[in-house]
Image 1 (cartoon, rainbow over the protein chains, first blue to last red):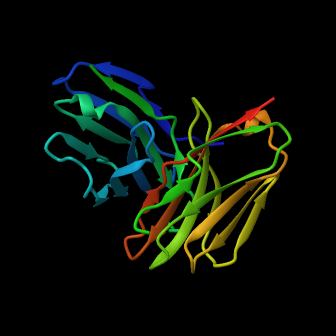
Image 2 (image 1 turned 180 degrees about the vertical axis):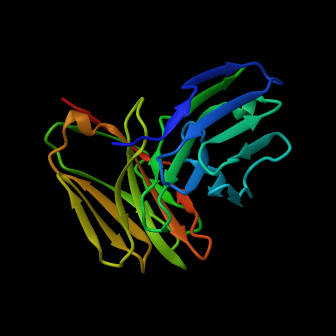
Image 3 (image 1 turned 30 degrees about the horizontal axis):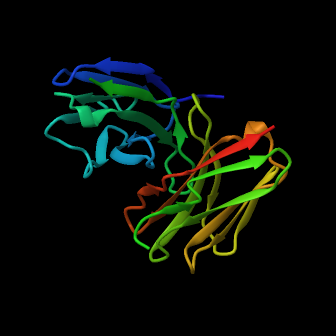
Length: 114
Length: 112
């Protein structure tokens, strides 16, 4: 079964450094999401793409976070500079176009900022 | 209710026990309710997507019901097994934006 690929699986970085995460969705999935999950809380949407266009980035801290999906396939999420409060699980998900289809998640990137 | 709330936060049951969890969500402008299972070191896996009031879905020993008028969904597991141990997340979408809002999850541990 096709999977959403994410890398790296784990990342430890010092505060004020830059960090980047990569996601390759299931082939054919036009909609791609980046979520952040802080321990003990539910996943929180950071950004949603439809093909290469940003549909919703209202919860993305734009002073330090950026996301792109240049060719409408894979996507990169960047944080610069990282802060201690950014320590979390970063999940990528994709789905077929259609509001009733389920999300398919990657394994996530566990970020620790020291 | 403005947010998606799940209860209990965590649950320990013995193997063979049946159990259930609750997901409460805003009933206004409701569109869909999702359930996911998230096992440690794996990715969240979709269980159900439900849209109709009174809907009931089943997948093996797991089933879910939906009440859109009062804004709640129940997830049932019959005859729990250790492999059912996971965090169960629900998420609702509403309004024209239809963004999914997740609850904090119910962490289930099934003891052998």
